[in-house]
Amino acid sequence: MQEVRGVVARSKGAPVTIEAILVPDPGPGEALVRVQSCGVCHTDLHYREGAINDDFPFLLGHEAAGVVEAVGPDVSDVAPGDFVVLNWRAVCGECRACRRGRPWYCFTTHNATQKMTLADGTELSAALGIGAFADKTLVAAGQCTRVDPRARPEAVGLLGCGVMAGFGAAAFTGNVQRGDTVAVFGCGGVGDAAIAASALAGARRVIAIDLDPTKLEWARGFGATDVVDASKTDVVEAVRALTDGFGADVCIEAVGHPAVLEQAFYARDLAGTVVQVGVPDPSMTIELPMIELFGRGGALRPSWYGDCLPSRDFPVLVDLYLQNKLDLDRFVSETIALDQVEAAFDRMERGEVLRSVVALEP
Ligand SMILES: NC(=O)c1ccc[n+]([C@@H]2O[C@H](COP(=O)([O-])OP(=O)(O)OC[C@H]3O[C@@H](n4cnc5c(N)ncnc54)[C@H](O)[C@@H]3O)[C@@H](O)[C@H]2O)c1
Ligand SMILES: [Zn+2]
Ligand SMILES: [Zn+2]
Image (cartoon, rainbow, N blue to C red):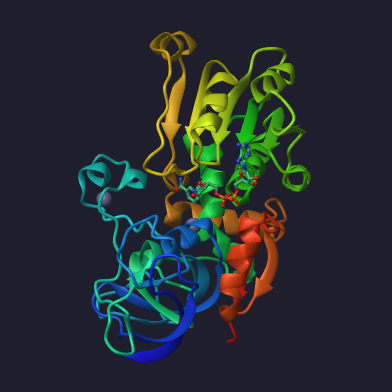
């Protein structure tokens, strides 16, 4: 057992606080990781606001890279000293999805068995089973993916959530191919990663759509060929005008809003694909004429974590980063200390950053 600092959301809507937390030694199937970096993701704020569930107190943070410090007795995939990116879908290998050879859909992903606690023994719920706004965290060994240690933790840690989700939404769920036209709705970290993946895949046109001109400017930096300001323009018309009047082959919704999903649906060419990667809140509904669903054909595809397999994809994306083909540094708007997470939530809400990333002292 070790005592370290962690960022905790104690109750619904209350500002987060730095607390002493107790981290158990790794048991079977577990790994203890010394955290080097952890990005501030919208989902952390959702937890703090009670929008995910009511299992307070939460230990926040889940876009992390670090070094394995110790492993449980039966763990052989990772070892102390390994540089790893943490993931929130450690596949089980045994559920009906895994058995059918579709592990990216795994229905019973693994987390650490033991709980981290506050100093008084109160059990913490780790955000997405990670909890990495902390000097150290305890995870399932399968949540650790070893990658090239020459990579900068602040950059590659972002693969742990938003960047992988967006990249995979385009590359895997949307299956963007050379010559495709792509429209990405919402240019935060997730949407920009989808833009980068589409550009890397050889898309002919990559149309970025957002309400915020600054976000659109940043989207160009990730490879958008055209931008549409949704606050000023009819988005569906604009996408059609940029695609010879037809609509895009792949439309990616990276906001989590029913009106935007509807735009994505109608901005698509016949037989095209809509990818839903933005997370809706439980009250949201959509209504579509069935004839439009049928008549337009193609596919409507929700994307969990970009249909990624961390063990397959993290090392590849880290290599692309090290070869300067995927600019992960561009997602890092600022590095901050552990006690600045609350302020980073404000900056995120004001749209001033793509990612604030906590960098921890060695
Ligand atoms: N599916 C997954 O596995 C997964 C993983 C991580 C994040 N997400 C989700 O992806 C979404 C995006 O995450 P993010 O970190 O990029 O968020 P973000 O808040 O940084 O970005 C959202 C962007 O959408 C823009 N926007 C808002 N309303 C819009 C509208 N009506 N039209 C066009 N643009 C609009 C905002 O200006 C902002 O730039 C969130 O819903 C998040 O929860 C999903
Ligand atoms: Zn499984
Ligand atoms: Zn996240």
